[in-house]
Structures are given as C-alpha cells and as structure tokens.
Image (cartoon, rainbow, N blue to C red; front, top):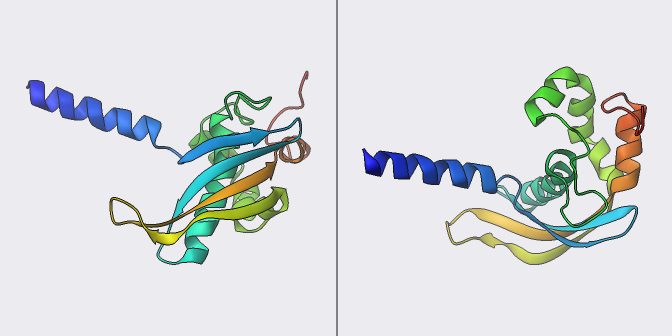
Length: 145
C-alpha cells in the first residue's frame, strides 16, 4: 500500500511540475524571454512546440519574477479553450507567431536523456501585445473592468 501511495504521489508531482518546460531568462515591461524545450519528430515540429510552450507559459502559468507573474488567462487551459474554440484554433495555427519577437536555438535538435527528440530555444514574446490581443478578442476581460 505504501509503495502505491508513493508512486501516485511521484506521478502527481511530475505532472504538476513538468507542464511547459520553460524557464524565464529576462523580462521588460512589454516583453518576456523564456528558455523553452519543444519535442517532435523533426526540428520544425519541435521548434513550433517550444514556441507554443513559451506562449502557453504566459497564458496559463505566468512568468514568476516579472510583471507577468500571474497567468494572462485566469482559468484552466481546457476551460479557456472550450469557451473560445474558434479563437484558439486560429491562434495556434498561425496567430501565435505574431507575438514572437525572436526564437534563438540554444541546443540543437537531438535526443534528450530520455531519448526523446527535442530542441531548446530562447523565445522572446511580446507579452503586453498578447494581453491586448486577448482582451480585444474577448478571451479575457480588460484590466480594471
């Protein structure tokens, strides 16, 4: 019984802490740079995953120690995406790229310690513009309203 509880506790900790594989590198009032790891069968897919992980960190987790320490979207990801299906479909297909200033490779495409194909990028995101875009499209309320 103890072993089962220990295993369940470890699995829960891993699921909670390994959400988007991002760390904060730097931040200004309007931009945040995150080091993000993306996974995929080729470099293009892995790079897209890394960029979307950086965006998702700002949207759903926040960037601790910056002016964006709280998530831009105050609900869970599944709740936000179910309420705004068309918006998020378009957003993840193409629109998210409009908020990325730069995407610089830190570690080349290869395999990690667990033999998964990945790439690590430093992704600079226009966080203030992203917040305004979400407000304008009705995904979040305007600050103070």
